[in-house]
Amino acid sequence: MKRGKVVIIPSEEQMLIDEFEQDILEGEYHTKGYQDFADDNNLGLKFRDDESHRAALSIAELGHFNYKTEDDIGVLAFYLPSEVTDRQLEYFRSHKEDYASYKIIGAYIFRKIDDTIYVDEVYGLEEIEKQIVKRNRKEEKDHVR
Image (cartoon, rainbow, N blue to C red; front, side, top):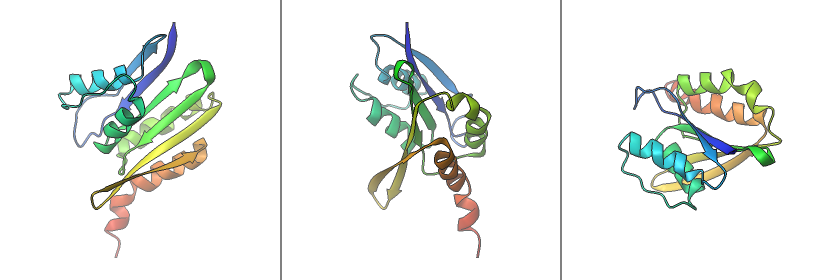
């Protein structure tokens, strides 16, 4: 029986592959999906079974938008990279109706300032979309004088 899933939308600036999606079955950890993605793409990352949160943040740190679901309890958790690509924004928007069926929706937002890593949390689809759009326009704002 399906427990949930892991979905990763790679940064097209780093990988020319489509989204990665893997169902997580009862008795499996979400880490399995993140580890399979890392192994398939030779990222050199290794995660223990109980490190799904760390694994998701590590993937976001590399620039890859990702999320995981716990379908039986209606939880959807996004992991946003510090910069969101156009493809990642488009993917989010095209699947937004699907996300609305979850009861609890949150996002962990990866930020790195100097060598310090920060993780912010936001809740609700509208707030998460605002953060995605903000991160998508980061480069544009950096160039405005």
